[in-house]
Image (tube, rainbow, N blue to C red; front, side):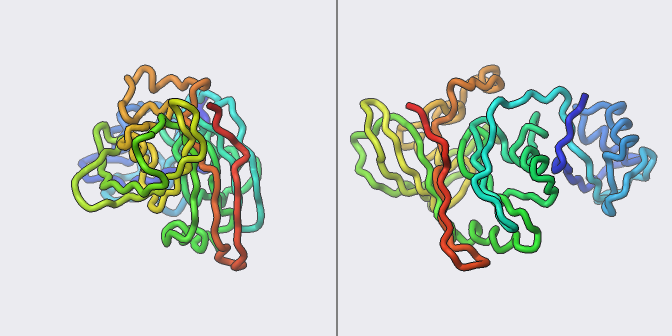
Length: 295
């Protein structure tokens, strides 16, 4: 049986091709999904046109046609950790996300995502994350609950008017001075989901402090100024202190091991705190995660 989250709708603008129907195009564009599966989705009204109305399999192909479809994952594996709602009002929701739970649907995850769980719990299809953290990272995630005020809160991140604080457990760096500012020019790596250090002016910056020293491992406070993909994980790795239990940095572990989450070894990275001035009320807001990193 396939699982579909309430917010798992994706959009495709049909590419250039010589197909006769939308069905033909979808089968070619997504070769991992067979024709029978697409026919079933059409029959259940899970393939929509730009106007939100269901399409029929014979609908003529047209380059650039906007098609909405719903991602479905058969036999989705449950993630045995629960999120916690720390704050909820008419504009904003603050959640404490556990390790291993994705924020939004991606890959093999549809219902087992923070967005899908909260949308179902609150019966709010308008719920949208204002920012994201990695699936393997735990901690605070902000959601907009109201489309009318969403842009005001999204601007906090775009204009860097929000202070983010992370904690990480990594190898000790006794030869470096702290606090310090770490700057890198980050570019896409290989495979595509990795980042790496490149040549050029820095495009990422993080302030790093040491909170606690325990022999070979220290607990660090990380204050990202920018918000690039895998920024904290790559920066700590380039310093010689890759975050404990990181399957990507400094070395990518083999795929067979990456595909099997070891719940006993979570990534030692936590989105601990968020501070900002509320764009609607002007009042200062401060949120702290209730989670903690075990040594």
